[in-house]
Image (tube, rainbow, N blue to C red):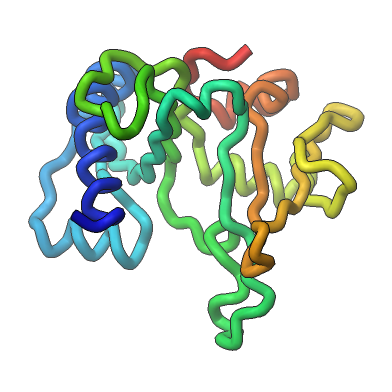
Length: 198
């Protein structure tokens, strides 16, 4: 079995057995059934895992990221940022600049990835409104900045997010610390729902 197939099984299990009940039910979001071709197109081309109808009747798109329990100490979600060495100029700017989904659902489960079928709960999760999050970057309430450290920090109620580089130098990523975000004036508009972040 390939890594992709295993990752897909892991994600599908967590979505079906934990997220639907422990996250989406609390939001009163109803998952929409899509034709296989459309679902595959949204996943592969747009990074959209699911579509939901909200209680108010709006249709929203979701990208999910689930992690195993060893990630519990970390309070950030990450976005791929740049691939400056990529020869194709259209691929230099990465996920951070191109993300299309309305929401990201990020969760850490209570077991290892290899033992995912025994997972019962999320140790922590966050539902992030990506439209508003990216607006807050545009409005300078959250800043991406080259720093000497690898962690986010607050500066005059502005969340500063460092640019971190992968060890092989092929790309960079930007973390967004949920716990620090919760201490800002914009938290209630960006974080739709969360559990386990303090």
